[in-house]
Amino acid sequence: ENFLDWLNLSNPSRWLLRTIRLSYAIHFARRPPKFHGILSTLVRGEITAVFRAEIAVLLAKDAIETVPSDKMKKGFYSPYFIVPKKVGALRSILDLRILNWALLKLPFKMLTLKHILTGVRDQDWFVAIDLKDAYFYVSILSRHRPFLRFAFEGRAYQYKVLLFGFSLSPRVLPKVAEAALAPLREVGIHILNYLDDWLILAHSRDLVCTHRDV
Image (cartoon, rainbow, N blue to C red):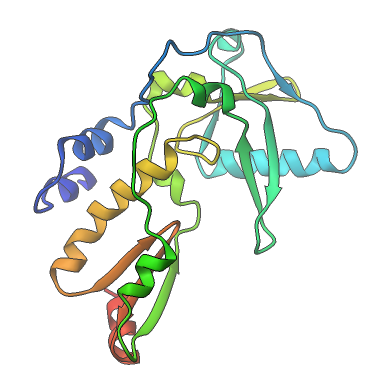
C-alpha cells in the first residue's frame, strides 16, 4: 500500500521506485572491502552503559539487527562510536572511511542557507519540522547490510538503514524527500528540504499552521 502511494506520484523516477520497493543498493566504484576479522568496539567504565543503551535504542527503532553467530565471520566491520547532538541527545556513527573509499563519488546538490534566504518573501512565517532519525526512513538492500557491521561485547550488529558516516547518505535522503514533498508543492505549499528539517513558508501565521497540518 505504501509503495502504491509512491507509484501514484506525478513523475517518480525509476531509481526512486526501485529504492522504495527493493531498498537502497550501495553503489561501489571498487571491489568492496573483504572480511578482515571482527572489529569489536572497546569501552570502559560508565560509558559502557551508554553504549548498551544506545544499541538497545537502535534495535528498538529497527535501525540495526543482530548478526547470527554463525554468520559473524563475514561482511565488513567498522569502528562504532557515539557523539552528542546539539540538543543533548546522542548519535551513533560508524567510522566508514574504508568502506566510503570503495563507493562511487556521486554528485549531489544540497540546499544551503543562502538558497533558503533567496526564497524568503517579505513577512513570511516559518515552521520547521524536525525529521528525527531521518536517515532511518530509507532501508538498505539486505545483501549490502553486511558491509555496515560493528561489534560490541561479543555480539555483532549491522545497519538496515542509511546512517551517519556513510558518504552517500546526504545524497540519497534528499532525493527521496524531494519526491515525497512534490505533491505538497503541487497544491501550493511552499516547503523546503534542508538537511534533516522541512521548512514551511507562508505569508501568514494561520496559513503556515494550516500547511503544517496538511
